[in-house]
Amino acid sequence: QFVCRRASFQIVQLFLDNKKKWQIDVNAQDENGWSPLHIACFSNNVLVVNQLLNLGLNVTLRTNTNDHILHLAAINKDPKVTQAVFESKQLMNIDKNVTNDFGATVFHCAALNQHSPKPLAYLLKNATKLNLKVNQLNNFHQSVFHYACGYGIENILKFLIQNAKKYAIDLNARNIRGSTPFHFACFNGRLQTVKILLKNSKKHNIDVSSKDNNGMDGQDFAEQEGHNDIVNLIKNWKQ
Image (cartoon, rainbow, N blue to C red; front, side, top):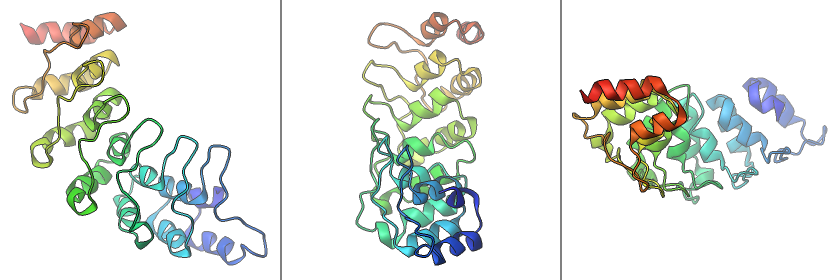
């Protein structure tokens, strides 16, 4: 597993060539349920990922939180890895709308990619071909845009806003408590995210004024959590 995390194609091949001699279980899972293929999809390059896929490793294994290799490939910094996994013949009969224990889809995971929006761009561009549901919500009725706003990853946020109309992304989805992505940004203290949402609210029809099921708006959430910089920002924007 350590080898599959960082090692080169040649080193991984050395281990694979000697798996019987060294008694290596290529599908062994660690204490978190991660197999070598999970690890490679998350952090290695496309050569190693293809190398493992072509070897016939088990592509159905899940981690302890029920993450599939598809989830982890969506977080890899290299969109070539994302593409290799999603278009692999080994995964031809696997539903690409897999969810983990939180109900998160591959889009939710891609929205957490701190390296690049390119894996997310690949998934959106190929959503029809891969039969992916762009606006599928997790167990708490949170959308991909909820994730982007809640975690405040700016390049992902800007990409989703700019491509919302093209890919029919709901920028105002509500979770089970009636909270919008804007509420999430305010609650979590994402100052730059709130700035971006306010700036783009009119042009992209982002709801920054509505209240949740308990009658709280974005400013209320910011005040509740002590995010005074966001409170002042919203007050100034309203004037």
